View 1 (cartoon, rainbow, N blue to C red):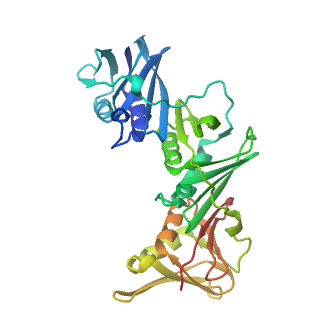
View 2 (view 1 turned 135 degrees about the vertical axis):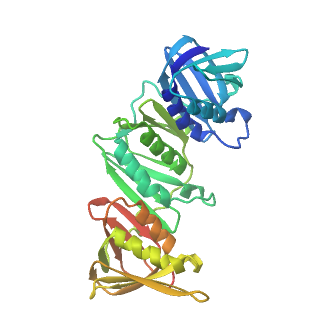
Length: 373
C-alpha cells in the first residue's frame, strides 16, 4: 500500500473517526484505525463494536492495500505536523508516514482481524433530513435520556418515522423531551428505531466538523439490527437498542391550569441565584411560587443547616396561583438546551409534570416531573 494526501484533510477525518475508538478495548485491534486504498480513494474505518465510522477521502493512490494503525498516536502525529503533502507506505507490517520535515513509523495489525463495519450501496435511504433539523433535535432531546444502564431502553432516543414527519423522543423517567421534524419528502416507509444517544451525539459532532450543506441520509439495516447515517463522505453505523420504549404519549398533558410566558434568560438568572442553596438540598429541590395577579414567579430553596434564598422574575401569567417543587438540576438542563429566548411553562397541579414549550416551535415539548413539596 502506498498513497499521498493532504495533511489537513487527513487530520480532519482522523479526528472524526478516532472519537469512536475505545480507550480500553477488549480486543487490541480496536485501538486501531483501518486504512484501505482503492480506486483513487483512501477509506478509513474505526469501531468500538457498538458504533462504526467509514469515511472516504481523495488520495493519490500508487498501490492498493489494507492495514490497521494505532489510532490515537497516528491522529496526534498527523494533527501536530504542518500543512503539507503526507506520504504513506506499508512495508513489512510497518506503516511509514512522512512529510518534508517529519516522519513516523507505526507497527500494524493485519486488517483480517478488524471487525467489519456495514456498508450500504445501491439502496434507497429510509429518509433524508436536513443537517440543521437533525442537530436541533439531538440538542433538544438527547440530554433527557438516561446515562446509566439500569434500563437500557432509556439510554437511547426513540426515532418515530411517520410519512413526512419524524419524532425524536428521550426520557430518563424524571423528564421527557420530544422534537418533531417535518421532512421535505415522505420517508420510504414508517418505522420506529431506538438509537443509542452516543451515536446521535457523534453524527451531530460530525455535522459540525464537516459543515457541508448536504442532507443526512438514514438507512435501516434490518438484518443486522443497525442504522446507518450518511453525511457528506462519512457513514456512521450504530447498533439499535432492543426493547420496548415506554408509551410516552399518555403522560404529555393536553391542557393546563397555569401558563407562564417567560424569558429563558430571566429564568436561568433566577435559577443561578437559587441554586446556591438548592445544590445542597437533597435532590436539588427548589420551589416555584407562581402568582398570576402580580405576574411574578418566585424561586426559593431552603437547607436546614445552611439557610435559604429566593429570586423573583416576571412573566405573563394566566390561570391559577400555584406552588410546585422541581429539581433545579433538571430545570437548568432544559433551559440550557433550549435555543430560543421566548418560552412557555405550563402546569396544572403540584403532582403533575411541568411542561416547557418554545413559543415559535409547536413541535417541541419537554416534561419535568415534580418533587414533593
